[in-house]
Image 1 (cartoon, rainbow, N blue to C red):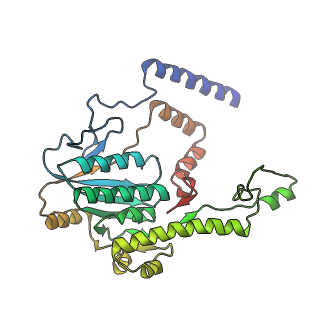
Image 2: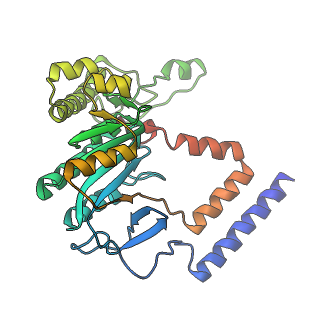
Image 3: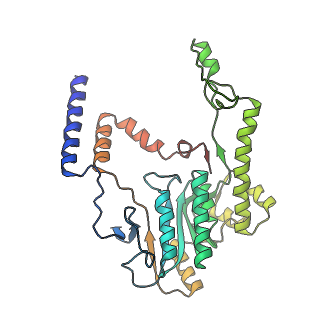
Amino acid sequence: MKNKKGLIILIAIIALALISLCFGIVGGNNAPDEPGVVITNPGIVRIEKKFGLGKENAHPKLKNDYIAVLHIEGVISPSNKTYDQEWLLRTIGNLKDDKKNCGILLFIDSPGGTVYEADEAYLKLLEYKKETERPVYAYFASLAASGGYYIGCAADTIFANRNTLTGSIGVICGSSVDATGMLEKIGIKSTTFTAGRNKNMLNYNSPLTEEQRNIMQSIADDAYEQFTGIVAESRGKDIAYVKTLADGRIYTAAQAKENGLVDDICSLEDAKEKISKEQDFDGSFEDFKFEYEETFFQSLMNTISFISHPKAFIDDVRGSTTPLRLSYMAY
């Protein structure tokens, strides 16, 4: 019975794939012919990845000055369903070249993520500020931790929701699981052929040596020094003081304000009002948010996966948001 069910599903997949190819929809990005900005939801503006925008205007449909509310949401990584590094960097670049853009308000709701992408986004925002002399603000939503806080350090002023959790200033640098004892007990011998005594470190079939422990710790320490240095510079604090805060813990909004990690606690609308008053700005705030576009074939495969193995599918979706899956080193 199971074999028959599997055969039916396989035939259905092949048939649908052939139909999709015939109609040219497997690639599945039905973007309009007009390049530029795609309005995907009311109030949400997304710069379409497939088209390059002119330097004069990142948003051709806007006639008046605006501050971009740039959403940084989900796990920071090269690309996933809620965050895309290429999109983020391109959007910042287009905003930089747009004469109608008057600043950026980062809307951050992220648990953190990879070191490389967090730092790259931070540096791109500093470049934006330096070349345009426009302000960058940050608003922390429910969670702005680790790499999310790191990117927020590019802001001149940080606002936080009263229920925000933030901080988590620290570094995760992989993990080591030594399974040699278990393998020996059950009679399995695993050998990896390498050149270089540390080439196999962190592998399950190789005990961790003291030298290897020191190597990995040095990498984590270097990233930690970079992180705390950026926090100290951004917040105008002494590095020794920052390190007393940076033990990896998270802080409530009230605690973060008390220790100087954020500047103000308010709602998003109140933050916008304060920014408008500070900048004598009477333009609009426009949302720029990445939206994942699933191809027809991906949608089909996900549907079949859910029907066939619903628990495994849900576990996989949940697991895809785990920062440790993304890189050996993460903020």
